[in-house]
Length: 218
Image 1 (cartoon, helix red, strand yellow):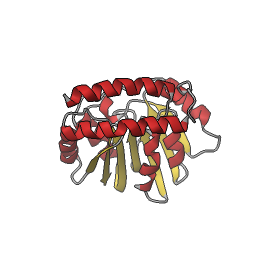
Image 2: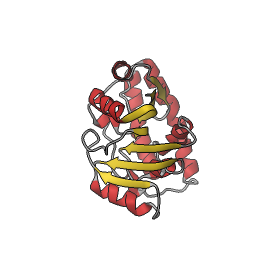
Image 3: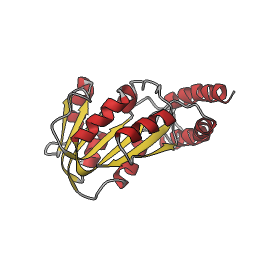
Image 4: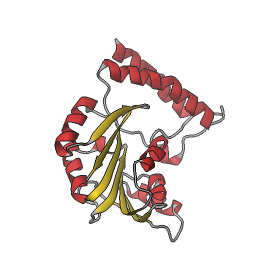
């Protein structure tokens, strides 16, 4: 019953978000930055999209690479980035197309559920420098009562955020949000178990707005 109610609410929420759009992933960018050192040498943002997070990372890093599988999105990210920036972008597969590291910071937002989980985390581990930081914001499939309760709590907060960010006026969806995100097919418990097997000591938490976070220090 809880799942049916949550799915109906999600359908209404999608329609509301089409009218009052806002970026659920960008909501976590500052949270990500708080998990990182004030200065670090290099970073790679996996699934960088149009580069918002990569450009934020560049304020602290000597070198940042944004990687995305979609060449058109990569071209837009590059066009949005001022000349002389520490950020470069490249089109490539997240598992085979990462530039040679190691990197002091690896970030991955709303991308991991598109990849084989264990293989992707092992790849990130190989590319992370000793003492480096991996931060993931991911999606999971709701199953438990706690999952559905957190989803229900997020509904009014999500609507309020969309209304306030758009000042109560309907708005077209931004270019960066036109692509639909594929639903996640793994439950949080399964993600946590697999992540801790590959990355011992990884810290994972369910979050608002249908996301979870993972932080691991190399």
